[in-house]
Amino acid sequence: MRKKVSKARATCANTETDDVNGNPRKVWTKIKFISFIRSAKIVLPAVRKLQGHRNTAADVVVVVVVVVVVVVVVEVVLMMVVVVVVVVVAAVVVAVVVVVVVVVIVVVVVVVAVAVVVVVVVVVVVVVVVVVVVVVVVVVVVVVVVVIMATV
Image (cartoon, rainbow, N blue to C red; front, side):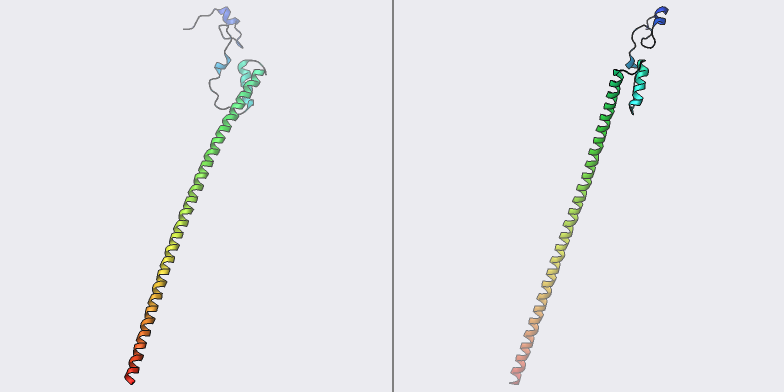
């Protein structure tokens, strides 16, 4: 419940610096939420209006603190963005390297398999040719021997 204040006391209150009870007004309770402060041009007039006086050291301190906080927050956000970008780029590079290595391994395996098949085919062809040549030579020698024996 609110206290009743005498009219004289209420009218004597300095509304710039005091509340209706004559007590100094708490200026900072008026600032409930500041979503985002873009620069000191927004902060300084707001502080002056709330405090009801011109430029003071407190205004400068408030502006400096707000600007430093904004700069720190922006730096932290930028650093997080940089870290995320670096991690994503690293993941993409690792994935590309893994794919390239797998493709190279597959190509090497296929080339080796084809080489083995070619070597086996060549060996088989050479063996078949040698066997055919040997058989033909043996047949020719046998025929020559039989012909020579028959004529003698």
